[in-house]
Amino acid sequence: MTTLRDAAMTSKAWPFEEARAVLKRYENAPPEKGYVLFETGYGPSGLPHIGTFGEVLRTTMIRRAFEVISDIPTRLICFSDDMDGMRKVPGNVPNQDMLRAHLQKPLTRVPDPFGEFESFGHHNNAMLRRFLDTFGFEYEFYSATDYYASGAFDATLLLACERYDALMEVMLASLREERQQTYSIFLPIHPETGRVLYVPIKHVDAREGTVTFDDETGREWTLPVTGGQCKLQWKPDFGARWAALGVDFEMYGKDHSTNTPIYDAICEILGRPAPHHFTYELFLDETGQKISKSSGNGISIDEWLTYASTESLSYFMYLKPKTAKRLYFDVIPKAVDEYHQQLAAYPTQTPEQQLANPVWHIHGGEVPASTMVVPFAMLLNLVSVSAAESKDKLWGFINRYAPDASPATNPDLDQAAGFAIRYFNDFVKPTRIFRQPTDKERAAMEELVSCLGDEARALDVIARKAAQEGKDVPLPAVDWQDDEFLQSIVFAIGKTHGFDPLRDWFSGLYEVLLGASQGPRFGGFIALYGIDETRTLIARGLAGELVA
Image 1 (cartoon, rainbow, N blue to C red):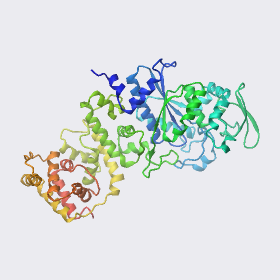
Image 2: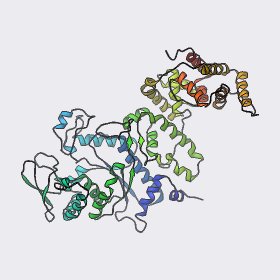
Image 3: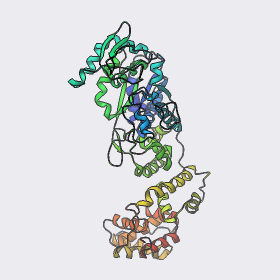
C-alpha cells in the first residue's frame, strides 16, 4: 500500500518538487541548527500587495510538503526590510507632503501618514501581519530595524568588513563603470539627519569594524558598522541575511532572477551555502502591467476578500506559479468555482491524485467537504435576474433547487451568496448590455417558452433533435427540477433551429436575457431560477423590456 510519504516523494505537484530539492541539502547529514529555515522577504515601502501575501502562502505550501517527506523540524520567517530608506512617496497614501520631508530615512523613522502607528514601516508591517494572520499562517516576524539595532546582525556585518574586498568584487562586476566609482556595500545612517546615505566609503577598518566617509556637506564621519548605525545595500543585504540566519529556502519574483548569482555569492563569501530558491512569475493588473506596492494597481487582499473567500484566493495563488497571471476582479468567480470543483473531486481521488490537487496544499492535507451546491457563477446570474439585494431572497430560489440546503448546513454557499450580491452590484451590473433577439433567436426562444412546463412539447423537440441526427435513443424521464433534462431541452431547440455552431444559441440567450456574452449552463440556471420565472424572463426579453 502506498503511504502518504511514498506518494509525496514522487508527486509532480510543484510544492513537493521544491520540498524534495530542499531535503536534498541534508541527504547526508541533518542541519546543524536543528531545523530547516524557510524565509520570505517583504519591502514595506508601500502597503503590502497580494503578491507579497502570495510569497508567504506558496512558501507555506512548500513547508507543509517538506513536513510530509521529512521529520526535520521547520521554521518560517517573514523578514521585513523596514530599515530601507524611503526613496519615493507611494502614490496611494495620504499626507504625501509630510512624507516628502522624510525621504531617504529608514521606513521605521518615517512618520505614519495614517497616524496610527509609530512609523510608516510599523504601519505597513502591521498591515502585512494582519493579512497573514487572517489566513492562519504559522510564521515568525523579523524586522530589519530590530535585527540591525539589537546586534543580531553584528557578527555578519563584522565578517563583511573582513571580507569587504571579496564582496565588493562581486558587486562591482555587476555595475556600470560610473556606479562603480561611488559604490559600497555599506550604507551609513547619518547620526544627525537620520537619513540612509548613498556615499562613497573612504576606508573600511576590518579590525575596528568601522567605515569612514564624507556626508553630503563634506564632513567626515567614522561609524561602526554594528548596532544599527549602518546597513547593507539591498543586494548584499539579501545574501548576508541568508548567511546570518542560515536560510534554506526563499522564493522571489522573476524581477530578482538576474540577481540570484549575486545573492548566492554574497552568502557563500560570508560563510554559508546559498539556500534553494524558487523564482515565480509576476502578477499583472488588468492592463498587463506589473502590480506594485507604491502605485497600488491590481487588486489588494482586502478587495479580494470583499468578494470571495480566503480559500479561493489561496487556490488562485497555487496555480502555475511560473506563469504570469492577470490579477484583477474578473478572475474571482472562476477561482471560486474551480476551488469548489477541486474540493468535490478530492474524496474519490487516489493518494497520488490528492497530493496533486490544489486543495491538499491549501488546507495542509486537512481538506474539508464543499457545501457549495450552486456554483458562484450561477449565483451571480441569479442575482442578475432576481434583482436580489439580500441573501434571504437568494435562499428562496436555492431552497427550491436544493431543499435540504440551509445557511447552517451549507456555510460555503451562504457566504458565497453574500459575496455574489456584492460582486454583481460592483462589477457585473454596470457592464451589462442587453440586446434584442434576432428573428432566428426569437423563434427558438418562443419554442423554449412553450416547452418549459409542457411535457409533450419538451419530449417532442428532444425527439426531433434525435431524428435530425439519425439517432434512435430513448426519451429521457421528465423531471422539471433536473439540470440534465432541462439542458437537453435547451440543447435540442438550438439544434432543431439550425444554430451552428451551437454556442451561438447560448450566446444569444446570455446576451438577450442576462446582458452578458457568457453565462451559466442554462439547464442548471432554469432549475435554480424556476420554470415559471424563466418563462417570464424570456417573455420580457422578447418584448424588449430588458433592453429598456
